[in-house]
Amino acid sequence: MGALAASIASHVPSGMLSAGLAALAALPNPGELVRKAARLEDELRELLRLNGRGAGAGAEQGAGNGAQQTRERFLRAYERLKDELLNDRAFNFDFTEETRQWVAKMLDYNVPGGKLNRGLSVIDSYMLLREGTEVDEEDFYLACVLGWCIEWLQASALVMDDITDNAYTRRDNLCWYKLPTVGLSAINDGVLLKCHVQAIIKRYFKEKFYFMELMELWNEIGLQTAMGQMLDLITTHTGAKDLARYRIQGYRRIVKYKTSYYSFYLPVACALLLNGAKLSDYVELKNVLIEMGVYFQIQDDYLDCFGDPQVIGKVQKIHTLCLPYCFLLASEFHCLTVLQVGTDIEDYKCSWLIVQAMELANENEMKILYENYGKSCPECVAAVKNVYKELDLQDIFLEYESRVYKHLVSTIDAEPDRAIREILKIFLKKIYRRKK
Image: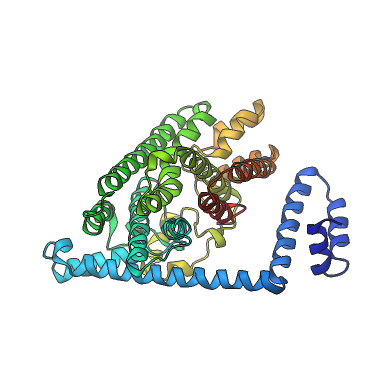
């Protein structure tokens, strides 16, 4: 009996495995078998985690406590940065009380409300690079500062993205621009958030020997992200005229620039610079992180269609007649339940699912896609999703996820630098089979 089998046998209640296998055998088609097997694997892993014994369980608990402490220190750093932006004349340019209150509300609404994975990844990466050496309070805080700069950049991108996509909710709340007191003034708020990043970096890092390389990094990533957004908008515009233009090469180009660079490469690059490294020495690391970013966005596209809306925190567009009521309850909007997922189909997005469908669909399925994709009526959305199901895109996604996971694990295991290896493992662990 192998180690995994022995571990399962010692933790799983009697009869659970045989019952699970019997259930799998009774399933009517291979696609359902794949999905059921994946769910069963998740349940077994969770059972093993919950029933972990001895030093392993203690180590996991200790790691969890450390992660929570890091998160709390990171959140305290946000309060410090916000206070400086609101009260330091070097930042606020003679704010009135009204403008100070506006910026405070805008920051709290848009910056710290997400999972904070990008910002925390700077700290995680930096601590691994510094393993074996003491990290004082100042060094830790500088890692927090760069982490929050990424969260500020993310907030800026989302504020702008929601406007261009005509989105309604973000992170279980009404989008910032949809608040009745905000509207299209959110455009200026998005610009302001991005300007904050440059001001914060200059304040804390202008005396550091790596300041110029740090600024070049941020300028380059900012340009790449904006180019990615432009590619997304242009591709959506041309795709609305001809779905056949949605191809995997174009899709990967959009994802690479719009998501991968700032979400995956930027946190690690910041940590490397903090540690005194030269980014030119880590080209292969950059390539692996970009590939992870593509995988992450493909997951996002899949969850937009097939995810649980109560987990994801996104809902479908709300009919216009409902908006006045929603505006009255804007501060409590997260309590309203609209059981839909994302809007990629309605918004004519060049998503991974439509790209796959265009490659696999027969003549009749292609006709349905052309007639219904990009339309907001529920019947049209349902027709597109039905084609996705007929093409077994859920199973194709699971096969892709398994394949890319094995490839990434193999690449990571071949990395000779232990710290880099551990950084990549943390990133992969955060995204593999995520639900939101």
